[in-house]
Each structure stands twice: as C-alpha cells, then as structure tokens.
Amino acid sequence: MKLLTHNMMRSHCKGVVNGFPLKLSSSQVDVKEIEFNPDFINRMLSRLEWPALVQIANQLGVGEGLPEMLPEEQKFEDEDVLKKIHHVLLEVEVVEGELECPETGRKFPISKGIPDMRLNEEE
Amino acid sequence: MKRKQLESYLEEVNQFSSPKLELEQYATDSHLAASVLYTMESSFGDLQDKIVLDLGAGCGVLSIGSSMLGAGSVTSVELDSDAIGDLQDNVSEFEIDNIDIIQGDVTSDLLRPDFKFDTVITNPPFGTKNNEGIDMKFLDRALSVVTLSGAVYSFHKTSTRDFILRRMEGRGLNVEVIAEMKFKIPHMYKQHKKKEVLVDVDFIRTSGKSSSSRGS
Image 1 (tube, chains in turn orange, blue):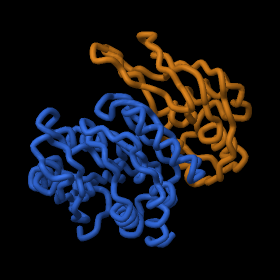
Image 2 (cartoon, each protein chain N blue to C red; image 1 turned 90 degrees about the horizontal axis):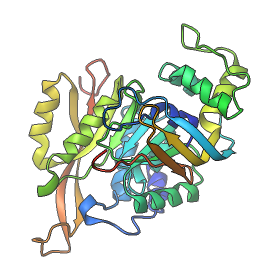
Image 3 (cartoon, rainbow over the protein chains, first blue to last red; image 1 turned 180 degrees about the horizontal axis):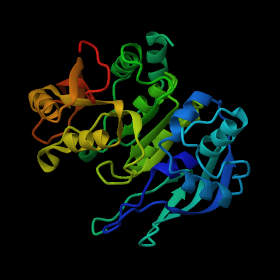
C-alpha cells in the first residue's frame, strides 16, 4: 500500500462520519524506486488531504523535507520538493501492517502490500 | 505503444486461476481489452499521466493495460482473494510499479469522497436474478469518484443500452457508446446448456458536460 492509496481510502464501518484518516501501524515498510513525473505530482496535489499525508509520512520517518502546508495555488515549482512528494506518495510501500478506523477502532489488516477493507454483513 | 504490441502483452496476462461463477469472473478478452484501452488513449487522451481507478479489477487486464499506456497511477479495487492473488502475480510478472490494490467491495464507501480520479474503468458483473442492477451500482460508484473533467468507461449488456443512456442523459451527463463487441461468457447459469454464450456488450464512455467529447 502506497501512501497515496492511504490518502484516498476511508473506513466505511456502519455509523462512521468521516472515517478518515485511517490510523496505521506497520511492521514492514519497503521503498521502491519509481520514475519521477513532476506534472503528474502537481496534478495530484489538489486531491490530497495534505495534513494526513504529512502526518503519516512523519510517522514512518520519511516526512523530512515535506512542506507542512500546500501553497494556495496547489502547485510546487521546486523540483526537490516535488521529488520529495513523489517519494512519499509513490515509493514508500507499507507491506505488512494494520489500518484502524479512527471512529470505531475496527482494524483492517495489510498483508503483502494489500489493505483488506472487507466488512462483515452486520458491520 | 502500438495497439498490436499492447495486445500481445495483454495476451500474457494470466487469467483467473479459480474463477467463481457467483462473482461472474471471466477475464476480459485480451484483444478486446487492448482495443478499448487503445481507443481510450488515442481518441480521448484518458490514460497517459492520468490518475486511474479500476473497479472490480479481477486478474487485472484493464489495470495492467492502463499502466502500459502511460497511466500515472492505477488503483485496482477487487473483492475476491483468489483474483487478487492472480492480479498480484500479473503485476509482478510485468514489473509494473504504479498499480496499487485495495481489497474490498466496490459498492461500499471505501474511497474518500473528496479524492477524485481522472479516469475510472469498470468491467462490472452484469448481474443475475440475485443481484440485478449490480452493473449500475458499479457505474454509480465510478461516477461518484471521477473529476468533473474526467471520464468513466464501463461495459454493459447491449440489452440495457437504452436504459443506461436515458439515465445518464437524465443526469445531464455526456454518454456515448464507443465500441460494440461480443463477450464469450462461460456457463454462468444452470439453465444454460451450452458451455459458453455470446453476449452483445457495449463499451460506454460517460463524462461531465464540461468534458470535451468526440462529436459534441
């Protein structure tokens, strides 16, 4: 699970209001090198929940150099900053761990890089 | 990438290792997949550098083809564990690094509503007596997470075309059938005596009014 994917998911347990951001605990995190595309990263920015991205990056120890806030125009010119965001969004992979619904505490396992968001019928 | 080349790659995508009839699992034909993906990119520019979502990805022909045609990222949602195993094998065999998989029910609310995708693709189950309208649920889910300027591509039985077109037009959306094809669907219902049936299928593009569209 890339941190980009964490940023687009929510908990959908019964009665949940926002269900976001899902809390993360991880036991294995890998880094894979991926081709850098600055235009793609810039187009992605307006869709992200920025504080949640910064928070999770800091938690995993990869947040250094990540701006605390998005500029108003939701674009970065500085290539180093874009590369940093690229790294955090796409190159950091949570392989084993657990997501947790922020409201109900329901846990969702992450195994072999795939979060399992299935719920039982009564949930 | 040339269409022929894409097709020959997609032929190498492994199909469902343990298909489940109740989930209507049968692989999207590689020739058809290559053809529709190629149209999405060459006629509409809907793949290159785009943020793509594949709902009900199965063993991943459409996700992998989207990535090959230059998608910036592909998110593949799939419910079934066996299909996900096949999808994962395919992704690693092709050494694709920008597909991320979420296991979950496509019709549930597992995506944050504010995160919008540029392009959403879905080859939904067409539905049987027990889950009639499931393809519309997939389509509605797709429409709820696409940007205003983006596009949703979906496969539907041609027999439901008028219903879908009317419904989408009723919501003020642009909708067009961009390809007509036949799906070979393996024995799915007990009353079928044949091993497989040929079903007429439309490939439909739905977009907001603001989006540019061929012929409008």
